[in-house]
Amino acid sequence: MLATMKLPEKWRRLFRVPRLTRGRIVVALAVAVVADGLQFLLGPLGWAFGDQIIDLMAMVLTAWLIGFHWLLLPTFVTELVPVLDELPTWTACVAAVIALRKRGQSLPPPGSTIEI
Image (cartoon, rainbow, N blue to C red; front, top):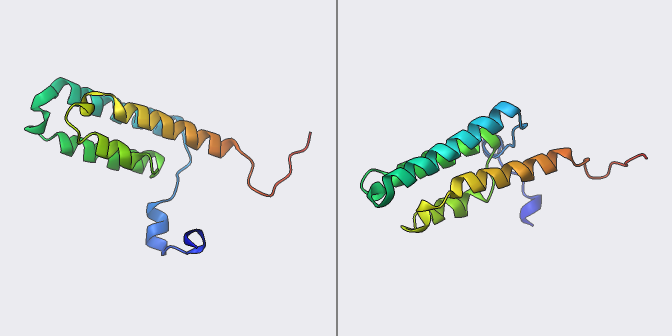
């Protein structure tokens, strides 16, 4: 039933998946690496210096660059756990989303036939 619901135009634009380009991929990976690097450098002091702001910015920028994906939400929540935030979760998540998006863009549309 949820799949048949039509979202309002504003929401559809928000959740649209942009075409992946080399530039979008590079910038999204750079955002993820910088966010993970800053959090690693801040270490346990990250909570005092706005670790959550870094996570929020990483999520918003990543969603803007490569489109929102549900994998971004557990990554954001994982970054709130004190010890787990030292892992490069943003980098791993962005790499996974890019791989999923590329695979989805290379598949033929449903209902089309492939000629051999």
